[in-house]
Length: 294
Image (cartoon, rainbow, N blue to C red; front, side, top):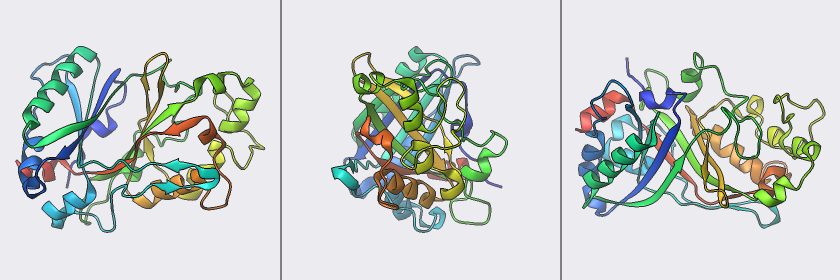
């Protein structure tokens, strides 16, 4: 039996930091893997840190070919949608996602991680986030209404036993900036038709528009994923960190294509009020696979 990284399912944390790195010397990928895999959480019974460690799929396949799931690849090209809409590719080599109940612990641990990787990798993207009104994103709507229950989430998020990469997961990480002024100028009923759910209690609309966000990311059509989205940013510049785990990368990639209007020609209406700034796929290996790299 293989064990998934516990941070994937560690709900209820109030502070998050996403650290994305690029390797400095492509010939030293194994050394970088060893350093990241050796990261230790603070030795405390309170205020501890959860880790999720992921690698660019091609780099993981190069270093650990026997544990690499078939056909998984990085976010290597921009997604060019209808009406000139673009989801940019900003693929990096490694991700360390930290979560905890307090930001001071995250801050200190993030600095420690960056220090440990100095000389091997450069920090190229850093984002901090936090929960907003329990389970809402900064549009004011509840986020993750379609998430599987925590008991069922491993079935959807993790590769099964008996295949390369067992207990690992494919992670899609994107930063979406909200066009807050334009969004907040809309009446609530218009917002609800764009999302495809009611704002107060997140009930799916019976006659939701075909371009609504719910219709364009229908998990009954594309397959279930496990989302850990979080708000990020400042009062003036903010949005959503999309954090989606799946046992099958195609579920994630087809949802993106659908949002961009590449499947039916209908673009997700929400993309007219949010702008994707980043896009990377990471393979999140099992605990046993990480341990072998130390």
